[in-house]
Image 1 (cartoon, rainbow, N blue to C red):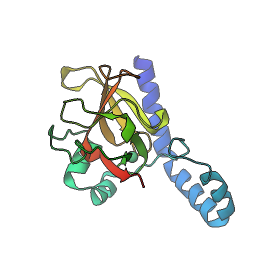
Image 2: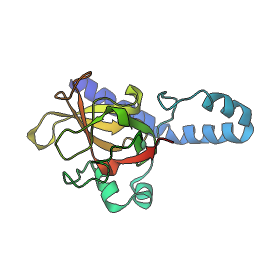
Image 3: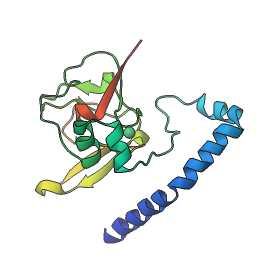
Length: 181
Ligand SMILES: [Zn+2]
């Protein structure tokens, strides 16, 4: 376990270190080959995972997010149960990451869990969310993060409904909602 932990730290450091180069390459691609960009973005659907990870400093996030969003998404906070603006939303559409707008959950996977947080039985795509072991507060839980900006979304538990048996317990404040047209 320790080895894998160290390995993942090294990988994280490595990917952070190469971030600047990635940004530069993307800029070059955009300015020099607009046709190539069209080809790569056109076939992409909400369920595919053709995206580059986003890395921003705490200062940048603070400018983009309000205090509560920053606390939950960047400091792994939790909104008070029953208070989220998307908890009782029953409209058809897509729930996206409030930090980077990556599609995360479809409304047809949302269910009433009675916990006070929006709950889903599966993400829109496995690549769009990252799951990590969370041992804080003396509990062993699985944290759910945005696959693109690493924003904290909530936790996933194994007491959900069929067909997956999973319950993605997500903070409203980590999500935006795009209503189906
Ligand atoms: Zn995100």
